[in-house]
Length: 182
Image (cartoon, rainbow, N blue to C red; front, side, top):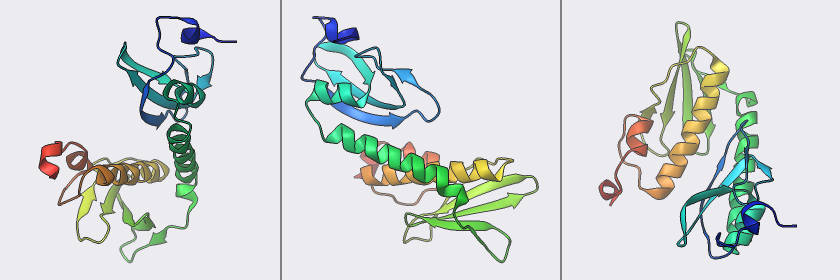
């Protein structure tokens, strides 16, 4: 039986465009279309005849867009990355001669260095001598590892949208206007 906005005639049921998907992590929300499913993986969709964007679950976005491949693949990737993220700190990290912890992740070289009680994160871009300074120091090594993983995933996402040149911080990469990348 239809629930939520599926029952409302003024809400378009087909012809939506899938925009993107995100993992809420520990958070959950209720699908804005069926208004019954509790979701962790949120799919955003827009429609020419609807003001705003709806945050919905995978099943609803599939029906709304009539795309039964794209959203499912995106959610599968998010689920895989969530598993990789959870296991990332448990991987075997190496120790440099200077005492820094380091590891390779998808072609990026991640270095954690301890300065007093704080952990500092540096990431070497693939096939370059350029380093990204995450500019966030934390007291917990486990938290630094998680930030490093998330930063590499952001760098990968940013590099697939635009070419990566010389940058100093992850904020530089993520804040470049599209016109600078052509």
